[in-house]
Each structure stands twice: as structure tokens, then as C-alpha cells.
Image 1: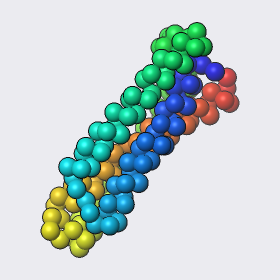
Image 2: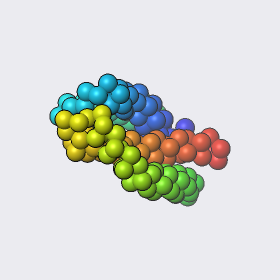
Image 3: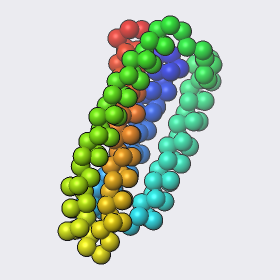
Image 4: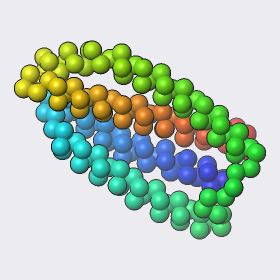
Length: 154
């Protein structure tokens, strides 16, 4: 297994566990109508910090134990795999962002009815978290495609 594939596995598991928790908690807050933008901001930063604290040492330890370089120059196959994964991830991201924009009218209507005290704030919080969600989902898809490409081609 190449170092890039190992990092893709680490990113996939970390993203599913840590950001899965984060987005689950955000949507739980929306469902219970208890949105707190400040608390969500700090929760996001904590999740991001934990993800970095897990992934960076794991990648360094993985490279050290396997005797690989931490960031070796990519060969032709690795460039091909990354190009395919990037193309798919970017296409999904573009479509998903358009979906968020199209859903913004629905989100603002939901905020007006469910968060009457601060509909503008709720709209902003929900839209920002939708954008974070589609970005994280596209990145996760990119890593999964990378793994499948390595398993298929390598």
C-alpha cells in the first residue's frame, strides 16, 4: 500500500467519525430548534483540531513504520489516480454547491417559521453548515475514489 493510499484511508475514517459527529450534532440542533452559532463555531474548530491531531501523527507514524517517505514524488499512476479523484470530487462539489444555492429559499422559509427569534441568523448558520457538509462530502468522495482507484489499478 502506497503512502498516498494510507493517507486516503486515514482521511476517510477520520472524516466519517469526526465530521460525522459534527454534522449529526448540527442537524440535531436544527431539529430541536436549539441553534447556537457560537457553540457550533467552537464545536467545528474542536472537531477540526481533533482531525488534524489524529491524521498528522498517524500519517507520520505510518510513513515511519513502513519506511516510506512522508510525501514522496508521485509517479505516473499516482498522478492519474489523483486526477480522476479530483475530477469526480470537483464535479460533485460544483453540483452540490448549486444545490445549496437552490435550497437557500427553502432554508430561509424554514428559518422564518422554526427560528422566529432570529431567522436571519438561523438561515446563515444552516447555509454555512450545508456548505461545510457538501465540501466535506466531496472531499470524502474524493478520498474514497482514490482508495478504489488504488485497489483497482495498483
